[in-house]
Image (cartoon, rainbow, N blue to C red; front, side, top):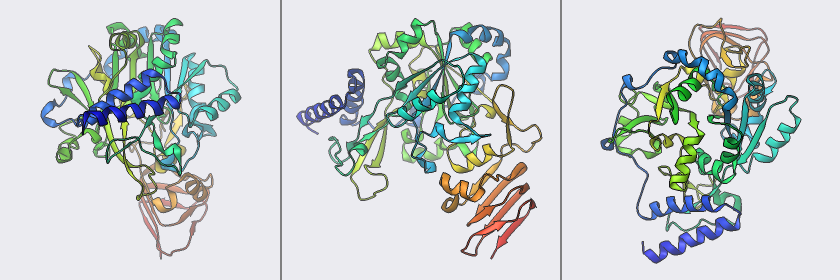
Length: 465
């Protein structure tokens, strides 16, 4: 591609972003990534450039209990930053995902607010343009007392794959833009003034979590470990299982720094090694701890936080395979682990990683497999001794939230003693159904079927034909 073409397109992107009111730091950051793409960068990280992480280098959370006292003393200087930009489109939602009722009549947001209130913990929400107004309305209606700050993440213009020019889509101009990934949090903290505000208020440490991860909450041992050992950045990681083969994994660069590699950054011919959980043992739970003073020093030194790019190929309208092919420039916030001298990772138990990404996850959380403890943490029901439940629901009938709720109608079956639940076909559940062991229900009739109220199902396969 000719140099003058690159300059022309970069100028067009800058003009478009300024026209939409994006701050100069965000425009410069996009330009940094865009210039890499024009120069031929793919964002790929090859196996030859990294090494697996050894178990001896990753402490376990249980080993840090001695730091809990220090952590309790630092709560007043800590903020929990919640990524609250998602709409939950994979579940058929069109509103802020955090406003979905998730358990015992509470939404994700209400659970987060009540937790913060009980801990007397400062709270900040990074909203998107899609979630900001509804979230502010929900906060105004909240009946508790908790200090909450809100700031906005940015948006990036999509690139036409054909020539890397700005994508145009007159049928829906909104689709010309994409969220830049949660790696935008560092730029958003800077441009919104939130970083300066928090530091000015005496806030030193930040726990960053996803709104839909009900296992993520403040841990005094981790907070104390960061403060006592003067660690600038901690990533919570967990052991990979066959269910986590596609998630981003932890590795080391050849100079010894920890780094994060997402599957979109792995060369296609190396995917089998990427998914080898005995080689790359740890995945990123997307819960991070950041020393805000270290972040300010990084911003002052570099001017902006530049992360490894993820070049995500899409159609401009994801629902129209005939629409133009585009690239979305994205970044992952966990990749910032490579930018901080002395950054560390800590292995946490699976109880701290309980995301609700799809409808089967929501059904599990709503069931009696999980209960709230006194601090409103979602924990495994003490009556359960089967490990995490596996739920497989027919996507045709349970893939969207409206379909799920219509077929359960508030009558979530008892699953506390269920190891695996599989449902194929159009099945409606009546109240007080009890599932034990491995239960398989299949409807082959082509019409709806209804399980009678109170039906017990134990290690059996039920087929309607």
